[in-house]
Every structure is written in C-alpha cells, then in structure tokens.
Amino acid sequence: MSALTLVKTTASPLLPAERAANRYSGVNTSAPSTKPLKVGGITPFSATDYPGQLAAVVFVQGCPWRCGYCHNPHLQSRTRDSPLAWAQVLALLQRRVGLIDSVVFSGGEPTMDRALKDAMHDVRSLGFGVGLHTAGMYPRRLQEVLPLVDWIGMDIKATQQGYDTITRTADSAKAVWASAGIVVASGVTHEFRTTVHPALHTPSEILALAQTLSAMGVRNYALQVFRGTGCKNDDLNVISTEKFPSADLIANVSALFESFVLRCE
Ligand code: SF4
Image (cartoon, rainbow, N blue to C red; front, side, top):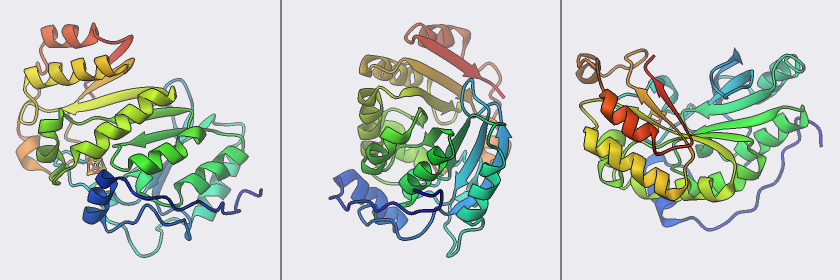
C-alpha cells in the first residue's frame, strides 16, 4: 500500500454514547471514510507529546465539546476544506524519516475524524510509531484504531458526575468511561491525565477520580494544573492555582499509581 492509498473501513453500528456525541457534533462515526484527515496544524518536532520519543504532532480539526479551559479553541470547529492537505502533511513527515520516532495525532479530537485509521496506516507505512491524544468521546472509533496505536494519552476530565459542567455538553461522561475501559483492557501503553482547576475540581473529587482510575487498572497518571496559555475563559484565568492541589493530595494520588506526574506548566 502506498502512503497515500486510502483503506476502506467497515461500517458498524454506533454505541448509544457515540450517538449522543454525534448529535452534538453532527458527525457520523459509522460511515466509512471518504475524505482524507482534516488537519488544523502540525508541530514538526516535539519532545513532550509522547514520553521518551521525538515526535511530530498532527492536530486534527474538530471537537464536539466546549471545555472552558481548552487551549486549542480554534480547532473546535471543522471547516469545509482541510486547512492543511493530508498529502502535504505526509510529504513533510516523509522528510522527517530518521529525525523523529513517532507521529502523535492530537486535536481537537482526532477520533472525530473518519479518516483517522487511514492516516495512521499512512504514518506506519513511513516507519513511524503512532501516538494518540484523545478525550475518549468516540469509543467505537477508538477501539477501531487502537491496534495501530503504540501509546495513548487519554484525557479524563472528572468523575462521571462532574463531566458535563466541564465539557459544557450533556451526557458527555458515558462515552468517555467506556473508552477508558477499552484503553485499559487493550494493554496499549497509556497515560491518563486530568487538567485540574480549583473552580472545576474539589480535592475530594480529584481523589475520588484517582481512586476510580486506579481501581480500573490505570497504571500511569498525570495531574496537569490549569495554565492560562491559549485559554480564552477569563473566569478561569483570573483564579490563582497557586498551591493547588495541596501537597497531601498529590501524595495520596501519587501513591495509587505505578507512575505519577504532576505538571504545573
Ligand atoms: S475536549 Fe479537548 S479539544 Fe475538545 S473542547 Fe475540550 S479541551 Fe478542547
């Protein structure tokens, strides 16, 4: 298969939670891909988006949610035509062979795009590993692409009860927790991560979330303290995150996982 060949995908019935996500996004995940991936931007070289690997990051356009702390709000809407043609992205990646190890699909929400699986095949055919950043709202597509993924960074935003407040979308939790189970069961190397903000998470919610993830079998977890870069929500930007979460809470959360990272910037 050449790098630009499209692979046919098989239509399959939607999970109820995916139907809910599609209702908000106008996307039908059950249909096969007919168009190449819609790419909103690319970082040709990153040492921070795939642990231990030098990677290019492909930012897929579109996300059905509207989180107040989103750092990439310009990627939330999908335009009619891809801002960057996939063929152009592949040509750039071809020039990176030997210079980087992997390609990370990020967003927006990469699993929103029906062409994701084809794009992953293309990237693998160039000899790269594949990383995926996802918020997990399309579990069926996630399951479909997981065999092509070497490492996954999965956003887990809150406990089930806290989800809709953060995503500003009704019924957003169910699909995510289905995806979380799929990731753990798959055995793909993972990092689950939660962006925390004192206006969105109480300490007890953070601990309860970490306990739930640990009980599910999540091994690697990161807490990312909110930072204002790229965030257009002044209500969140004006609140100080100094000393949040507390040292005690960090120690308690850390003890639940094989590996734990606190990211403050
Ligand atoms: S899920 Fe991610 S990309 Fe989508 S709105 Fe929330 S933070 Fe932004």
